[in-house]
Length: 316
Image (cartoon, rainbow, N blue to C red; front, side, top):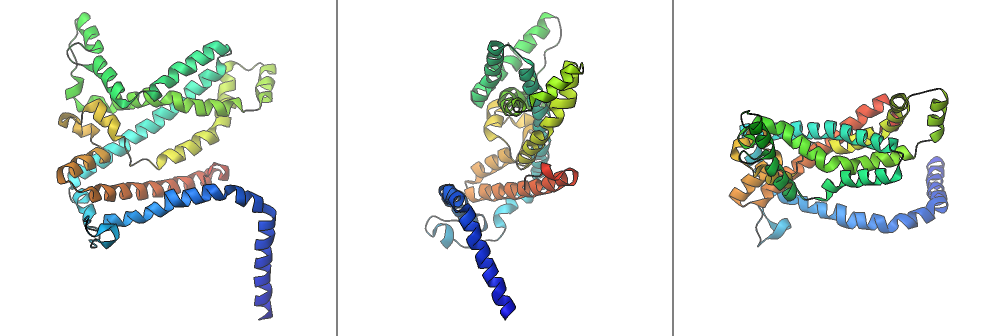
């Protein structure tokens, strides 16, 4: 009994000494903790709606339980669901791999521009697409790809070549969508990588210059290795969205054309079409939960894999 009493006292003393040492920091973090609990965790109780047959009279918590009934429309329509899941994963992998590569290349290019005016103009031009809506991007894309009067087909016709019907051939969109995604987001992501590069110790570059290293050798042996932890952390964060898609992007660029569904139908567009047809938003919420849980599992697994190579690369 005496031993237990000693242990309890030790815990109390430990908590007291912890609060005495870090109490000011906890007090500083308290408003943020309260906001996160109020707006991020308490609303999660509404997820119970995906297991209920919701009606306005009884509300979320009074509606009858239906178990996994709201998930059936997705998993029982296996062929369409599998096509949507496959397209979502393929497109997100393309976005992540080529988007990250383009952003890192842009950031390294920014770092090599020594003229400040040229650097500011280049950064501004690269980040402008990020602030344009997908609706405007869809209009620009249509002007480029349109069968009658589009830029590409006008050039092909000028050189006596056959026109390409981009809006009736699904295979082209496995390339067009990643290019559009890179065009819109690479400049914004590059700013994050560039900010990281500017924080590197300049003595590494000065020592390399003394040893006669070329620009490409400095990029290869200094910039890229030092940038690797940031790339891995941002990659781990993007893995959590592997089953999510941008519905606005697909609606603006493809108009949800049935002809292009083979390569452009993702989970979000499938749910949108299904829910709009049935008018039951609990089914959309059910698939949203499925995407979130799967994304969380992917993040935990990827984080574990990253830890196998280096503990410093882990998010948690």
